[in-house]
Length: 96
Image (cartoon, rainbow, N blue to C red; front, side, top):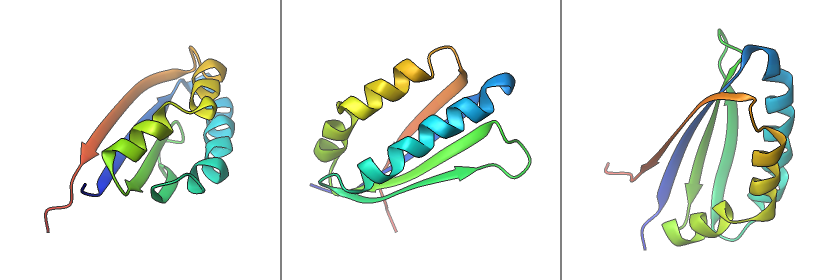
């Protein structure tokens, strides 16, 4: 098992920025105590307030997959349905 880094870019629709931000913030505390979570940090672009980015590190891809199946993620998806313009997720491995 090797550590997994996740970079998730979320672009909210211009009229839904506050909704998406509020729903993303709800994920922080519950995720940070999940098994395997090393860090789970949410960022917001200084120039484009609709652009959010999660920088996450997990002990393994398997534990991240458990996270992805959790209820709070499905609740986030339901709450933000139609409010997100774009979502790009990258699974990455540290090489140096």
